[in-house]
Length: 186
Length: 431
Image (cartoon, rainbow over all chains, first blue to last red; front, side, top):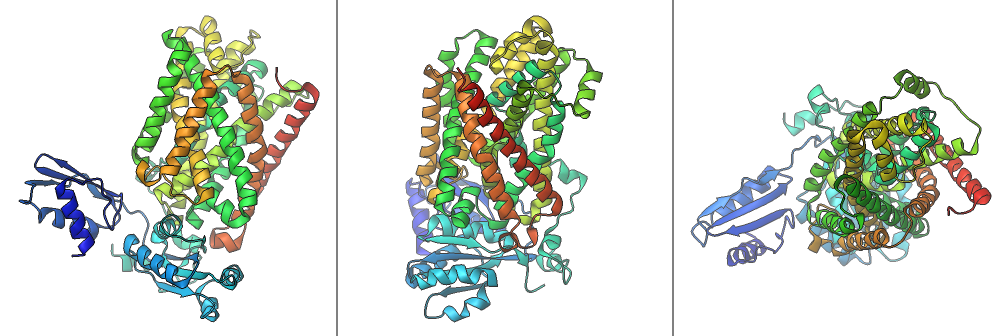
């Protein structure tokens, strides 16, 4: 198990229930009530919920006797994955920052990108293959200023999460989303 | 059904818009209520109720047909706000900043926040007056606890909990339907004036029309709608649901406005009663329509404030945070988005100060309407340009009907601005 997650669980059992979860952040809330641990929140995927419940139950006997996960739910999903795709673009001061942002977003959104690339002046020729023609000039202006651009193509159902993370949680200078398109594999 | 099988439903050559289209069942229709219905409720804030009451008291039912005309305009403008968010995956303030630059986005957001805070102050005062009418407690004593309570609820309740409460509160507007029936209007006359347009070429008639349209289509609704879509992450696959949610919300909103005008028109217009505020209207109804009509009208004002004030505060914070690129959202806890919540807190404090100071509510209402009137057509035009751009919207670009109604709404709002300038030039500032 990821050391950060083990550390988080240790902190929770020690009483630090305010600490945000390393992956799910503020979406998961924990409360310790005497000998029981309550997990609440809304997660995007059932597998994430199962994993959290498993991790919590494996800690029974280590300061807790009971785990209450009744209010830890998976968000009802009305959208169909695999129908549409969308490309999210974010500009950073340099390639290293863009790479950190990519790693952060992939980990926290729990999304597998359909395609992703970091473009700067060293590989700007591939830009035309990554984004619609109408966006090439906007991005090239950023690259000409010395910035590195993260281009990440995801399922449309994950695009809100990815854009939100890029825009609000990373040090990007600029973000943009191309319009949703029919998924390429269909 | 597996994801793979579902994805095969997309036929070759289909546009993204066709592929995303959702077919709703009757059961789905019952579950569509969301940001659209809340926005509809927030549209009729106490200041709006005051405007509709004054329209009813001064013009009777003569302007009901304008509400009928404004309904599709309001629906289209709100649907554009939602669509921008669902296609670009961000809120309206961010779209304005990224697409049009800070020079366009900053004045729009600053004017929005100033207008919102003044409106919040006027709304708090109206709620206090309504509580005084119902309970006899002097309005000054209730404003601070009321503002504190709403501030705490807005800051500490999660978006989902808050929106659930706001959705229930939208039902409070049914009080105006009952109040309208208790006022015993001449229904054939009401219906005739609603469905048969009638124009009087008098300044009073025209200014009342302008005030009514300006109150119906207001900028804070655009920001709340788009941010609500981001909070709910509805996306383009739920556009049918979103559009229906908005349709229901806006029809309910204008239906409420219709019944307010019917109640005040039936009782106050025929008796030439003078009203300046929503509480004035509630008070004036009592001798003619009875205590229940008056009390229901006042309860409606309190409920309207409970919906609109948190929406006004939150839409200001969404605007500022989107402009500055801060973490934002009522779905986040306060410690995770401190600047966003600070804006909400400051908005409440200033509004409370305005409400308890000696600011004239009518003047406050007038100035907030002037500011709203200035930015509303600009925002509608920017949204029309954005949602008509294939580069930005792809296959979700506006259709002909949306553009015709949208540009019609922009033209009406520009006309409203011209009328406002005319009023200022001929009559000066309100005394």
